[in-house]
Image 1 (cartoon, rainbow, N blue to C red):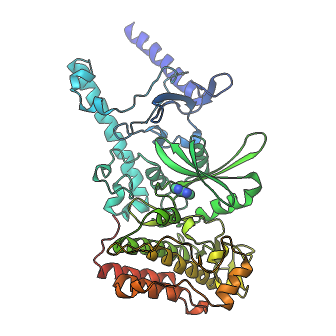
Image 2: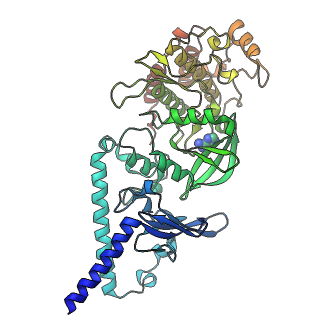
Image 3: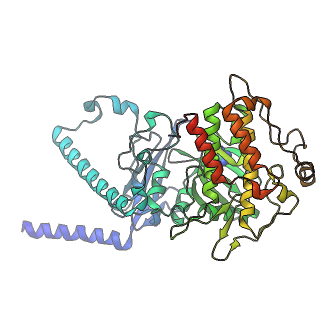
Length: 512
Ligand code: ADE
Protein backbone atom coordinates (compact mmCIF):
# COMPACT_ATOMS: atom_id res chain seq x y z
CA UNK A 1 0.00 0.00 0.00
CA UNK A 2 2.75 2.37 1.06
CA UNK A 3 4.69 1.68 -2.10
CA UNK A 4 1.62 2.41 -4.27
CA UNK A 5 1.20 5.73 -2.44
CA UNK A 6 4.87 6.55 -3.02
CA UNK A 7 4.48 5.72 -6.70
CA UNK A 8 1.43 7.99 -7.02
CA UNK A 9 3.26 10.84 -5.29
CA UNK A 10 6.27 10.33 -7.59
CA UNK A 11 4.02 10.36 -10.67
CA UNK A 12 2.33 13.58 -9.53
CA UNK A 13 5.72 15.21 -8.91
CA UNK A 14 7.01 14.03 -12.28
CA UNK A 15 3.91 15.37 -14.00
CA UNK A 16 4.32 18.78 -12.42
CA UNK A 17 8.03 18.91 -13.38
CA UNK A 18 7.21 17.82 -16.93
CA UNK A 19 4.55 20.55 -17.17
CA UNK A 20 7.24 23.08 -16.24
CA UNK A 21 9.58 21.73 -18.86
CA UNK A 22 7.01 21.60 -21.63
CA UNK A 23 4.75 24.56 -20.87
CA UNK A 24 7.10 26.70 -18.84
CA UNK A 25 6.32 28.26 -15.50
CA UNK A 26 4.58 31.45 -14.54
CA UNK A 27 6.83 33.92 -12.78
CA UNK A 28 5.83 36.91 -10.74
CA UNK A 29 6.83 39.98 -12.82
CA UNK A 30 6.79 43.48 -11.35
CA UNK A 31 6.92 45.27 -14.71
CA UNK A 32 4.47 43.13 -16.64
CA UNK A 33 0.89 44.23 -17.26
CA UNK A 34 -0.80 41.35 -15.42
CA UNK A 35 2.19 40.88 -13.06
CA UNK A 36 3.01 37.55 -14.71
CA UNK A 37 5.42 36.33 -17.35
CA UNK A 38 6.01 32.81 -18.65
CA UNK A 39 9.51 31.35 -18.53
CA UNK A 40 10.75 28.08 -20.01
CA UNK A 41 13.66 28.15 -17.60
CA UNK A 42 13.82 30.16 -14.42
CA UNK A 43 12.14 33.00 -12.53
CA UNK A 44 14.35 35.37 -10.59
CA UNK A 45 14.30 38.04 -7.91
CA UNK A 46 17.04 40.62 -7.38
CA UNK A 47 17.87 42.87 -4.48
CA UNK A 48 19.54 46.18 -5.26
CA UNK A 49 20.90 48.67 -2.78
CA UNK A 50 21.19 52.27 -3.95
CA UNK A 51 24.17 53.29 -1.83
CA UNK A 52 23.43 57.00 -2.29
CA UNK A 53 19.89 56.82 -0.86
CA UNK A 54 20.18 53.61 1.17
CA UNK A 55 17.01 52.38 -0.55
CA UNK A 56 16.59 48.68 -1.27
CA UNK A 57 14.66 47.64 -4.38
CA UNK A 58 13.65 44.29 -5.82
CA UNK A 59 13.05 43.17 -9.42
CA UNK A 60 10.84 40.15 -10.09
CA UNK A 61 11.19 38.76 -13.63
CA UNK A 62 11.43 35.79 -15.98
CA UNK A 63 14.97 34.82 -16.93
CA UNK A 64 15.60 35.74 -20.57
CA UNK A 65 16.03 32.42 -22.50
CA UNK A 66 19.34 33.74 -23.88
CA UNK A 67 20.70 33.82 -20.34
CA UNK A 68 19.62 30.29 -19.47
CA UNK A 69 23.13 28.96 -19.93
CA UNK A 70 24.31 26.51 -18.73
CA UNK A 71 20.72 25.35 -18.23
CA UNK A 72 21.34 23.48 -14.95
CA UNK A 73 22.94 26.50 -13.31
CA UNK A 74 22.82 29.68 -15.41
CA UNK A 75 25.80 32.03 -15.04
CA UNK A 76 23.32 34.84 -14.70
CA UNK A 77 21.84 33.39 -11.53
CA UNK A 78 25.16 33.35 -9.73
CA UNK A 79 25.90 36.38 -7.64
CA UNK A 80 28.92 36.30 -5.44
CA UNK A 81 27.39 37.67 -2.27
CA UNK A 82 30.75 37.72 -0.52
CA UNK A 83 32.05 40.40 -2.84
CA UNK A 84 28.94 42.37 -3.78
CA UNK A 85 27.16 44.24 -1.04
CA UNK A 86 24.81 46.15 -3.33
CA UNK A 87 23.37 43.42 -5.53
CA UNK A 88 22.05 39.89 -5.05
CA UNK A 89 20.06 37.59 -7.32
CA UNK A 90 18.15 34.38 -6.72
CA UNK A 91 16.65 32.18 -9.43
CA UNK A 92 14.08 29.43 -8.97
CA UNK A 93 12.13 26.96 -11.11
CA UNK A 94 10.29 25.06 -8.42
CA UNK A 95 6.81 26.17 -9.44
CA UNK A 96 4.55 29.00 -10.51
CA UNK A 97 5.39 32.33 -8.84
CA UNK A 98 8.27 30.69 -6.93
CA UNK A 99 10.09 34.05 -7.06
CA UNK A 100 7.29 36.06 -5.50
CA UNK A 101 8.29 35.67 -1.86
CA UNK A 102 12.04 35.50 -2.44
CA UNK A 103 14.17 38.33 -1.07
CA UNK A 104 17.84 37.55 -1.86
CA UNK A 105 20.03 38.78 0.97
CA UNK A 106 22.79 41.30 0.42
CA UNK A 107 26.12 40.60 1.98
CA UNK A 108 26.94 42.85 4.93
CA UNK A 109 30.27 43.06 6.77
CA UNK A 110 28.50 42.69 10.09
CA UNK A 111 27.16 39.31 9.08
CA UNK A 112 30.61 38.14 8.07
CA UNK A 113 32.31 39.31 11.25
CA UNK A 114 29.68 38.23 13.80
CA UNK A 115 29.78 34.87 15.57
CA UNK A 116 28.26 32.15 13.39
CA UNK A 117 25.73 31.15 16.11
CA UNK A 118 24.38 34.68 16.14
CA UNK A 119 23.62 34.50 12.42
CA UNK A 120 22.12 31.03 12.05
CA UNK A 121 19.77 29.59 14.57
CA UNK A 122 19.72 26.06 13.16
CA UNK A 123 20.80 23.07 15.21
CA UNK A 124 23.92 21.17 14.27
CA UNK A 125 22.09 18.55 12.14
CA UNK A 126 20.75 21.26 9.88
CA UNK A 127 24.17 22.85 9.75
CA UNK A 128 25.70 19.57 8.59
CA UNK A 129 22.96 19.06 5.95
CA UNK A 130 23.36 22.64 4.69
CA UNK A 131 27.15 22.21 4.70
CA UNK A 132 26.90 19.05 2.59
CA UNK A 133 24.49 20.71 0.12
CA UNK A 134 26.75 23.78 -0.20
CA UNK A 135 29.76 21.50 -0.74
CA UNK A 136 27.93 19.52 -3.44
CA UNK A 137 26.79 22.70 -5.20
CA UNK A 138 30.36 24.01 -5.07
CA UNK A 139 31.74 20.80 -6.56
CA UNK A 140 29.16 20.89 -9.39
CA UNK A 141 29.91 24.56 -10.00
CA UNK A 142 33.65 23.96 -10.08
CA UNK A 143 33.17 21.05 -12.50
CA UNK A 144 31.04 23.25 -14.76
CA UNK A 145 33.63 26.00 -14.68
CA UNK A 146 36.44 23.54 -15.32
CA UNK A 147 34.57 22.24 -18.40
CA UNK A 148 34.08 25.81 -19.60
CA UNK A 149 37.77 26.53 -19.09
CA UNK A 150 39.00 23.56 -21.07
CA UNK A 151 36.69 24.45 -23.97
CA UNK A 152 37.82 28.01 -23.91
CA UNK A 153 41.10 28.42 -25.75
CA UNK A 154 41.61 31.77 -24.07
CA UNK A 155 41.92 30.26 -20.63
CA UNK A 156 45.06 28.43 -21.66
CA UNK A 157 46.79 31.69 -22.51
CA UNK A 158 45.64 33.67 -19.50
CA UNK A 159 48.13 35.39 -17.29
CA UNK A 160 47.83 34.46 -13.62
CA UNK A 161 46.71 38.03 -12.94
CA UNK A 162 43.69 37.53 -15.15
CA UNK A 163 42.09 35.44 -12.43
CA UNK A 164 41.57 38.62 -10.49
CA UNK A 165 38.45 40.70 -10.58
CA UNK A 166 39.89 43.65 -12.43
CA UNK A 167 43.22 44.50 -14.01
CA UNK A 168 42.65 48.11 -13.09
CA UNK A 169 42.74 47.92 -9.36
CA UNK A 170 46.03 48.53 -7.59
CA UNK A 171 44.44 47.72 -4.24
CA UNK A 172 45.58 44.30 -3.07
CA UNK A 173 42.26 43.96 -1.20
CA UNK A 174 40.53 43.93 -4.56
CA UNK A 175 42.90 41.28 -5.88
CA UNK A 176 41.07 38.38 -4.28
CA UNK A 177 40.56 35.27 -6.40
CA UNK A 178 36.83 34.93 -6.97
CA UNK A 179 35.12 31.79 -5.83
CA UNK A 180 33.17 30.34 -8.72
CA UNK A 181 35.07 32.54 -11.17
CA UNK A 182 32.10 34.52 -12.45
CA UNK A 183 31.44 37.74 -10.66
CA UNK A 184 31.79 40.64 -13.03
CA UNK A 185 31.02 41.71 -16.56
CA UNK A 186 34.63 41.02 -17.44
CA UNK A 187 34.32 37.41 -16.22
CA UNK A 188 31.10 37.00 -18.16
CA UNK A 189 32.70 38.34 -21.36
CA UNK A 190 35.82 36.19 -20.88
CA UNK A 191 33.73 33.07 -20.26
CA UNK A 192 31.23 33.45 -23.08
CA UNK A 193 33.17 34.64 -26.11
CA UNK A 194 35.09 31.36 -26.61
CA UNK A 195 38.26 33.22 -27.43
CA UNK A 196 36.93 35.09 -30.46
CA UNK A 197 37.32 38.39 -28.67
CA UNK A 198 34.29 39.74 -30.51
CA UNK A 199 31.89 40.26 -27.64
CA UNK A 200 28.86 38.73 -25.96
CA UNK A 201 25.98 37.10 -27.89
CA UNK A 202 23.50 39.76 -29.07
CA UNK A 203 20.62 38.64 -26.85
CA UNK A 204 22.86 38.74 -23.80
CA UNK A 205 24.00 42.24 -24.77
CA UNK A 206 20.38 43.36 -25.03
CA UNK A 207 19.47 41.81 -21.71
CA UNK A 208 22.42 43.46 -19.94
CA UNK A 209 21.65 46.86 -21.51
CA UNK A 210 18.06 46.68 -20.32
CA UNK A 211 19.09 46.08 -16.73
CA UNK A 212 21.30 49.18 -16.58
CA UNK A 213 20.26 52.15 -14.47
CA UNK A 214 21.53 55.48 -15.74
CA UNK A 215 23.07 57.48 -12.89
CA UNK A 216 24.63 60.71 -14.15
CA UNK A 217 25.59 62.35 -17.41
CA UNK A 218 29.39 62.49 -17.83
CA UNK A 219 29.79 63.96 -21.25
CA UNK A 220 28.27 65.20 -24.46
CA UNK A 221 29.76 64.40 -27.83
CA UNK A 222 29.22 64.76 -31.51
CA UNK A 223 26.68 61.92 -31.52
CA UNK A 224 24.83 62.30 -28.22
CA UNK A 225 25.45 61.88 -24.51
CA UNK A 226 27.65 59.69 -22.35
CA UNK A 227 26.26 58.49 -18.99
CA UNK A 228 27.59 56.60 -16.03
CA UNK A 229 25.29 53.66 -15.43
CA UNK A 230 25.14 50.75 -12.98
CA UNK A 231 24.77 47.08 -13.79
CA UNK A 232 24.64 44.72 -10.79
CA UNK A 233 26.64 47.14 -8.67
CA UNK A 234 29.30 47.74 -11.37
CA UNK A 235 29.83 51.06 -13.13
CA UNK A 236 29.47 51.07 -16.90
CA UNK A 237 29.66 53.90 -19.46
CA UNK A 238 26.61 54.28 -21.71
CA UNK A 239 26.89 56.30 -24.92
CA UNK A 240 23.39 57.26 -26.03
CA UNK A 241 23.06 58.19 -29.69
CA UNK A 242 20.23 60.33 -31.00
CA UNK A 243 17.96 58.46 -33.44
CA UNK A 244 19.30 60.37 -36.43
CA UNK A 245 22.78 59.02 -35.58
CA UNK A 246 21.72 55.41 -36.07
CA UNK A 247 24.46 54.84 -38.66
CA UNK A 248 27.15 56.07 -36.26
CA UNK A 249 25.79 53.81 -33.50
CA UNK A 250 25.75 50.84 -35.85
CA UNK A 251 29.23 51.55 -37.17
CA UNK A 252 30.81 51.94 -33.74
CA UNK A 253 29.15 48.76 -32.44
CA UNK A 254 30.28 46.95 -35.61
CA UNK A 255 33.90 48.03 -35.20
CA UNK A 256 34.00 47.12 -31.49
CA UNK A 257 32.76 43.63 -32.40
CA UNK A 258 35.51 43.00 -34.91
CA UNK A 259 37.02 39.64 -34.04
CA UNK A 260 40.06 39.73 -31.79
CA UNK A 261 39.78 43.45 -31.12
CA UNK A 262 39.60 43.08 -27.32
CA UNK A 263 42.79 44.43 -25.78
CA UNK A 264 43.81 46.05 -22.49
CA UNK A 265 44.49 49.33 -24.28
CA UNK A 266 41.28 49.47 -26.33
CA UNK A 267 38.12 50.55 -24.48
CA UNK A 268 36.25 47.37 -23.48
CA UNK A 269 32.97 46.94 -25.33
CA UNK A 270 30.09 45.41 -23.35
CA UNK A 271 26.84 45.79 -25.27
CA UNK A 272 24.86 47.58 -27.96
CA UNK A 273 21.09 47.88 -27.83
CA UNK A 274 18.38 49.60 -29.85
CA UNK A 275 15.08 50.00 -28.03
CA UNK A 276 11.96 51.45 -29.60
CA UNK A 277 9.90 53.27 -26.98
CA UNK A 278 7.02 54.00 -29.34
CA UNK A 279 8.08 57.58 -30.11
CA UNK A 280 11.76 57.22 -30.92
CA UNK A 281 14.52 54.61 -30.90
CA UNK A 282 17.04 54.67 -28.09
CA UNK A 283 20.48 53.62 -29.28
CA UNK A 284 22.89 52.54 -26.56
CA UNK A 285 26.52 51.55 -26.66
CA UNK A 286 27.77 50.20 -23.33
CA UNK A 287 31.49 50.08 -22.49
CA UNK A 288 33.78 49.81 -19.49
CA UNK A 289 33.68 52.84 -17.23
CA UNK A 290 36.94 54.51 -16.19
CA UNK A 291 36.55 56.86 -13.27
CA UNK A 292 39.58 58.98 -14.21
CA UNK A 293 37.72 60.02 -17.36
CA UNK A 294 39.46 61.02 -20.57
CA UNK A 295 43.17 61.77 -20.97
CA UNK A 296 42.16 65.37 -21.67
CA UNK A 297 40.24 65.55 -18.33
CA UNK A 298 43.13 63.89 -16.53
CA UNK A 299 45.93 66.09 -17.90
CA UNK A 300 43.83 69.24 -17.41
CA UNK A 301 43.87 68.76 -13.64
CA UNK A 302 46.85 66.50 -12.90
CA UNK A 303 50.53 66.09 -13.68
CA UNK A 304 52.43 62.84 -14.22
CA UNK A 305 55.92 61.81 -13.14
CA UNK A 306 58.48 60.34 -15.58
CA UNK A 307 57.41 56.69 -15.06
CA UNK A 308 53.76 57.78 -15.31
CA UNK A 309 54.43 59.59 -18.60
CA UNK A 310 56.20 56.57 -20.10
CA UNK A 311 53.61 54.07 -18.88
CA UNK A 312 50.78 56.20 -20.25
CA UNK A 313 52.44 56.86 -23.64
CA UNK A 314 53.53 53.24 -24.03
CA UNK A 315 50.00 52.00 -23.33
CA UNK A 316 48.51 54.30 -25.99
CA UNK A 317 51.16 53.23 -28.54
CA UNK A 318 50.44 49.58 -27.62
CA UNK A 319 46.70 50.09 -28.15
CA UNK A 320 47.29 51.80 -31.49
CA UNK A 321 49.77 49.13 -32.62
CA UNK A 322 47.11 46.48 -31.85
CA UNK A 323 44.46 48.44 -33.75
CA UNK A 324 46.76 48.89 -36.79
CA UNK A 325 48.01 45.32 -36.85
CA UNK A 326 46.53 42.75 -39.17
CA UNK A 327 46.46 39.28 -37.59
CA UNK A 328 46.27 36.54 -40.20
CA UNK A 329 44.41 33.25 -39.63
CA UNK A 330 40.93 31.97 -38.84
CA UNK A 331 40.89 33.88 -35.56
CA UNK A 332 42.63 36.84 -37.19
CA UNK A 333 41.92 40.54 -37.03
CA UNK A 334 41.88 43.10 -39.85
CA UNK A 335 44.08 46.19 -39.73
CA UNK A 336 42.06 49.11 -38.36
CA UNK A 337 42.80 52.84 -38.52
CA UNK A 338 41.13 55.08 -35.90
CA UNK A 339 40.88 58.40 -37.79
CA UNK A 340 39.87 60.47 -34.75
CA UNK A 341 42.68 59.96 -32.27
CA UNK A 342 42.86 62.75 -29.63
CA UNK A 343 43.20 63.09 -25.86
CA UNK A 344 39.41 63.34 -25.46
CA UNK A 345 38.99 59.90 -27.07
CA UNK A 346 41.44 58.13 -24.74
CA UNK A 347 40.46 56.95 -21.24
CA UNK A 348 42.78 56.76 -18.25
CA UNK A 349 42.54 53.63 -16.13
CA UNK A 350 43.15 53.48 -12.38
CA UNK A 351 46.62 51.99 -12.89
CA UNK A 352 47.70 54.97 -15.03
CA UNK A 353 47.56 53.13 -18.37
CA UNK A 354 45.13 54.15 -21.10
CA UNK A 355 42.46 52.66 -23.36
CA UNK A 356 41.64 54.05 -26.80
CA UNK A 357 37.90 54.65 -27.30
CA UNK A 358 35.47 56.25 -29.78
CA UNK A 359 35.97 53.88 -32.68
CA UNK A 360 33.00 55.30 -34.60
CA UNK A 361 35.08 56.71 -37.45
CA UNK A 362 37.48 53.79 -37.75
CA UNK A 363 38.05 51.98 -41.05
CA UNK A 364 39.08 48.36 -41.56
CA UNK A 365 41.28 47.02 -44.31
CA UNK A 366 39.95 44.05 -46.27
CA UNK A 367 43.09 42.24 -47.50
CA UNK A 368 41.23 39.80 -49.76
CA UNK A 369 39.59 42.63 -51.68
CA UNK A 370 42.45 45.07 -51.10
CA UNK A 371 39.85 47.65 -50.02
CA UNK A 372 38.97 49.90 -47.09
CA UNK A 373 35.61 48.69 -45.69
CA UNK A 374 33.85 52.03 -45.99
CA UNK A 375 33.33 54.61 -48.69
CA UNK A 376 35.67 56.81 -46.75
CA UNK A 377 35.56 60.52 -46.76
CA UNK A 378 39.04 61.99 -46.67
CA UNK A 379 38.27 64.80 -44.22
CA UNK A 380 36.83 63.30 -41.05
CA UNK A 381 37.94 63.55 -37.46
CA UNK A 382 38.89 66.55 -35.36
CA UNK A 383 40.45 69.44 -37.30
CA UNK A 384 43.07 70.26 -34.65
CA UNK A 385 44.51 66.73 -34.87
CA UNK A 386 44.32 66.33 -38.67
CA UNK A 387 47.53 65.39 -40.45
CA UNK A 388 48.77 67.75 -43.21
CA UNK A 389 47.77 65.32 -46.00
CA UNK A 390 44.23 65.14 -44.51
CA UNK A 391 43.98 68.94 -44.27
CA UNK A 392 45.06 69.52 -47.89
CA UNK A 393 43.27 66.37 -49.15
CA UNK A 394 46.41 64.95 -50.73
CA UNK A 395 46.04 61.70 -48.72
CA UNK A 396 46.07 58.61 -50.87
CA UNK A 397 42.90 56.81 -49.80
CA UNK A 398 43.58 53.70 -51.86
CA UNK A 399 46.55 52.95 -49.71
CA UNK A 400 45.51 51.78 -46.23
CA UNK A 401 48.84 52.74 -44.68
CA UNK A 402 47.93 56.40 -45.35
CA UNK A 403 45.24 56.19 -42.64
CA UNK A 404 47.65 54.59 -40.18
CA UNK A 405 50.20 57.34 -40.84
CA UNK A 406 47.57 60.02 -40.18
CA UNK A 407 46.83 58.28 -36.82
CA UNK A 408 50.55 58.39 -35.94
CA UNK A 409 50.63 62.15 -36.61
CA UNK A 410 47.79 62.58 -34.05
CA UNK A 411 49.62 60.27 -31.62
CA UNK A 412 52.63 62.63 -31.73
CA UNK A 413 50.37 65.52 -30.68
CA UNK A 414 48.98 63.45 -27.80
CA UNK A 415 52.55 62.65 -26.61
CA UNK A 416 53.23 66.39 -26.62
CA UNK A 417 50.14 67.00 -24.41
CA UNK A 418 51.37 64.32 -21.95
CA UNK A 419 55.03 65.42 -21.90
CA UNK A 420 54.09 69.02 -21.03
CA UNK A 421 52.45 67.70 -17.86
CA UNK A 422 55.49 65.64 -16.86
CA UNK A 423 56.52 66.96 -13.46
CA UNK A 424 60.29 66.77 -12.84
CA UNK A 425 61.50 68.45 -9.65
CA UNK A 426 58.27 70.46 -9.43
CA UNK A 427 58.66 71.89 -12.95
CA UNK A 428 55.99 71.27 -15.59
CA UNK A 429 53.90 73.18 -18.14
CA UNK A 430 50.23 74.07 -17.87
CA UNK A 431 47.84 71.88 -19.83
CA UNK A 432 47.24 73.07 -23.39
CA UNK A 433 45.71 71.62 -26.54
CA UNK A 434 48.11 71.24 -29.49
CA UNK A 435 48.43 74.48 -31.55
CA UNK A 436 46.79 76.45 -28.70
CA UNK A 437 49.14 79.34 -29.51
CA UNK A 438 48.74 79.20 -33.31
CA UNK A 439 45.01 78.80 -34.08
CA UNK A 440 41.79 79.99 -32.39
CA UNK A 441 39.56 77.62 -30.42
CA UNK A 442 37.43 75.53 -32.78
CA UNK A 443 39.68 76.28 -35.76
CA UNK A 444 38.47 75.92 -39.35
CA UNK A 445 40.12 73.52 -41.79
CA UNK A 446 41.59 76.52 -43.60
CA UNK A 447 43.16 77.90 -40.38
CA UNK A 448 44.66 74.51 -39.61
CA UNK A 449 45.86 74.01 -43.19
CA UNK A 450 47.66 77.37 -43.24
CA UNK A 451 49.43 76.57 -39.96
CA UNK A 452 50.25 72.89 -40.50
CA UNK A 453 50.70 72.64 -44.30
CA UNK A 454 51.75 76.11 -45.49
CA UNK A 455 53.62 77.25 -42.36
CA UNK A 456 54.78 73.68 -41.52
CA UNK A 457 54.35 74.62 -37.86
CA UNK A 458 54.37 72.03 -35.11
CA UNK A 459 53.96 72.41 -31.31
CA UNK A 460 57.11 73.76 -29.67
CA UNK A 461 59.13 71.58 -27.32
CA UNK A 462 60.26 73.33 -24.11
CA UNK A 463 64.05 73.63 -23.55
CA UNK A 464 63.81 71.78 -20.21
CA UNK A 465 63.04 68.56 -22.12
CA UNK A 466 66.60 68.43 -23.54
CA UNK A 467 68.25 67.88 -20.19
CA UNK A 468 65.96 65.05 -19.03
CA UNK A 469 66.64 61.72 -20.78
CA UNK A 470 63.04 60.45 -20.88
CA UNK A 471 61.63 63.79 -22.07
CA UNK A 472 64.41 64.05 -24.66
CA UNK A 473 63.44 60.64 -26.06
CA UNK A 474 59.74 61.56 -26.00
CA UNK A 475 60.59 64.77 -27.86
CA UNK A 476 62.46 62.84 -30.58
CA UNK A 477 59.62 60.32 -30.90
CA UNK A 478 56.92 62.98 -31.29
CA UNK A 479 58.94 64.83 -33.92
CA UNK A 480 59.23 61.57 -35.88
CA UNK A 481 55.42 61.26 -35.71
CA UNK A 482 54.94 64.76 -37.14
CA UNK A 483 56.97 64.62 -40.34
CA UNK A 484 55.26 66.38 -43.19
CA UNK A 485 56.19 63.38 -45.31
CA UNK A 486 53.78 60.73 -44.02
CA UNK A 487 55.93 57.82 -45.26
CA UNK A 488 58.84 59.02 -43.07
CA UNK A 489 56.80 58.80 -39.82
CA UNK A 490 57.41 56.03 -37.30
CA UNK A 491 54.94 53.14 -37.17
CA UNK A 492 52.92 52.52 -34.01
CA UNK A 493 54.82 49.25 -33.52
CA UNK A 494 58.20 51.03 -33.72
CA UNK A 495 57.00 53.65 -31.20
CA UNK A 496 55.80 50.90 -28.88
CA UNK A 497 59.23 49.23 -28.98
CA UNK A 498 61.12 52.50 -28.43
CA UNK A 499 58.97 53.41 -25.42
CA UNK A 500 59.20 49.87 -24.01
CA UNK A 501 63.02 50.20 -24.17
CA UNK A 502 62.81 53.63 -22.55
CA UNK A 503 60.66 52.10 -19.80
CA UNK A 504 63.18 49.28 -19.31
CA UNK A 505 66.12 51.71 -19.15
CA UNK A 506 64.27 53.82 -16.56
CA UNK A 507 63.50 50.58 -14.67
CA UNK A 508 59.75 51.12 -14.93
CA UNK A 509 57.60 48.19 -13.95
CA UNK A 510 54.97 47.09 -16.50
CA UNK A 511 51.39 47.81 -15.38
CA UNK A 512 49.92 45.31 -12.93
N1 ADE B 1 33.72 59.42 -20.75
C1 ADE B 1 33.49 58.93 -21.97
N2 ADE B 1 33.59 57.61 -21.97
C2 ADE B 1 33.91 57.23 -20.71
C3 ADE B 1 34.18 56.00 -20.07
N3 ADE B 1 34.13 54.87 -20.76
N4 ADE B 1 34.50 55.99 -18.78
C4 ADE B 1 34.54 57.15 -18.12
N5 ADE B 1 34.31 58.34 -18.64
C5 ADE B 1 33.99 58.38 -19.93
